[in-house]
Amino acid sequence: MSGNNAPLNHVFYRNQNWRYPKVSHGKGIYLYDENGKAYMDGCSGSAVANIGHGNVEVADFAAEQMKTIAYTHLSRWTVDPIERCAKKIVEWAPEGLNHVYFVSGGSEATETAIKMARQYYVERDGQGASKWKIISKWNSFHGNTLGALSMTGITGRRKMYDPILVNFPKIPQFYHYRNPWHAKTLRETSILAAEALEEEILRQGPENVAAFITEPIVGSAAPGVYPDPIYFEMVREICDRYDMLLIIDEVMSGFGRTGKRFAVEHFNVIPDILTVAKGMSSGYTPIGAAIVNDEIFNTIMINGSGHFVHGHTYGGNPLSCAVADKVLSIIERENWVDNAATQGKYLMQKLQHLNNKPIVGDIRGIGLMIGIEFVSDKKTKKPFEQDDRLQGEIMEACLEEGLVVYPGGGCFIGYKGDHILLAPPINITRHEVDLLVEKLERGIENVLDRLSIGRRQYHEKTHYNDSANRECSDENDDASCPPYVRGNRKKHTSLCQTRRFNRTYPRSRREFEADKRPESVQGSSRSIGRDDC
Image (cartoon, rainbow, N blue to C red; front, side):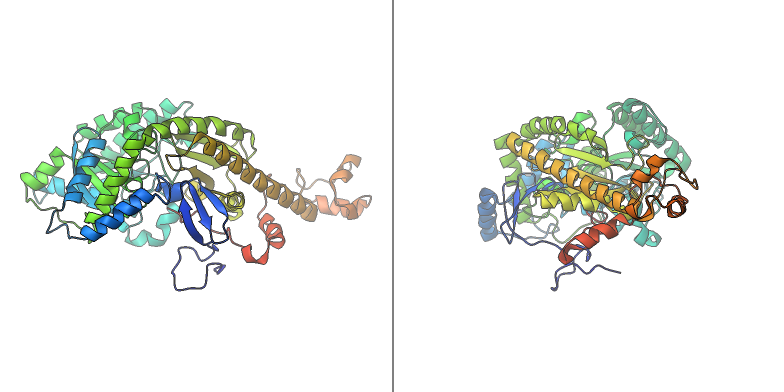
């Protein structure tokens, strides 16, 4: 049953269990609600607002472009802003990626890429071409449209729509913290993950596989996870050997977020297709793109039919292209890519002391794309129970401190596991990094306090004992018992003959916390983060 916490209006919100505070405006790295409270945007929305909010230069430029021309259809017209934006993107992109197909967002970009891969082989090999399968990975996210979701490896996102998805094959992620091979080093994990690709190609039959899609640094599915460079060296060679395309999804990591123009630069790899969006316009307009090499473009558009069988209404509109071109020019002028590298390194250093927190399991990332994973047991890496909704608790606590983080889950066996992504605007300052870490630490401490209270109250109520079905006889046991049983051996023994306390924070903790919260926020953190993107 829905918590029905969303505002009562005509908007079909994504999550009726969330209360949706109202933002009045944004400026720099801050959002401000209708009551004037400032929230540091520690995740740039969803790694979108790379240059921050309320940029007057972009707003004025967009207004002037609207007066000139805002919309034309890409199937009929070309316009200067489209051509300028494509030229700018090619200048940013890895060498050899010379052709830009514009769309309106990340899901459209990855869906475009797989259609492009299929048509490439049909144009090259004829209508009987058998290559169509796309190999992707578990613990990956590539979008919410049906083709993109078919490539996504998050069980919770797929389950509702599973009957209508394409069952694309999936392999393990280069997720060292939870690698299935029990590898001891990141390099070993990366080698085994690359070898898993070749094994899956042979299982599916190379004649049936059109492409492999991967993120260079994982975004919402397992934030901040990245491989040793050997991974992409092996993957590029495997794709070439089996005549398949390499698609790299930089929807989240592209355009300066990791301290390079594109994250692939960290790994010295050039894909056949690069998918981009988000930071491309920093949220000032919806836009995305698939950037492709000469081989794909020439096979379809020059030596083939000359017609890519695909398109969207707003793809390549002059307004969005003009704004994206302006945003990228500002990033260049202000040298914010280098700033992302500098402040990202500093942020990672500042975060290291959080490893002392009992629920922080792993901190990883590159540049200003950093993930923190939370566990109930650091030694075993045991995740919290799904009903604990820890990701929601973390987000709620951080909001109370004036910090917005990007919550998520499902990194462990598809539905358990809690994490957050830190991805502040790439123009963040050193002082603002200090503030971010202070707010985050206070938020985590507040959650620890809540967990401690819930666990203690639960223990007093049910008196779970570390040993199952044993009668307590030591006088010291009385010290941990509720007052009403101390000295009463019969009640004491009865309470202690119960199931073993499993050392995870109990589900009933949320009942205790809900009782203490104001009525307006009870249940507000339920389901937060699972459906975020």
